[in-house]
Length: 273
Image (cartoon, rainbow, N blue to C red):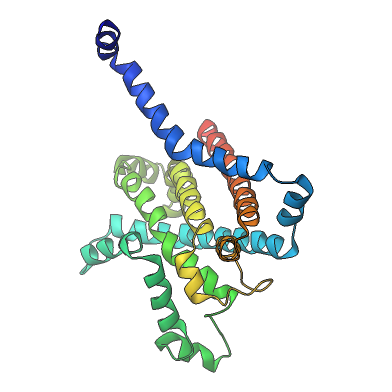
């Protein structure tokens, strides 16, 4: 009882134990189980599955499409956030609420919706067909699905930061003779860079692990438009648990390395600012 009462008197210790336990059981333990499953197999077999041409193609396509999706979302997400924050117009609240739809919409439903609209018989797909442009069952479909599910992250990351920007800084720059363009690049943008990188990282990570919408809108053919998440699912369907674990671990390590680079860039930017 005395030990228990002493623990109650130390809320910081209890909080630390709770947070550590939460992270351990939710994040670290599953990862440990994944790598234990891998090291129980022959290392040559692990290497063979990790470097299989189909797997390498899936890694490459996943990273490329996730990067481009995050880049596009960062550019257009910034523009949308700026308009929503700085201007008042009819329907603003509706658009602001619609931004969160990808959070609530099941990804398989999102994929079905995109396939319906951008398919050859869809509203937009039928128009693109005239110019021999195909979206569904191609890499473009994968990119579209990743953009759809990950674009709210940039907007919701930037929105509170832009709202808190001090108008007096812009007015001071204008009073010193700076043009609106100079004010944007030398006063506003340096303040927003950490949030922009954070939004890019969140969008990239969300796109990297997308499965539900991609499996609906792409053909999922090896060496064509097969991404890593779908390849893992196909491996599990074939009861290849080792292959699924190896591919998942490789994607995890690639994602971790990418996040470390982005965080390093972010910390370097913070020091320079």
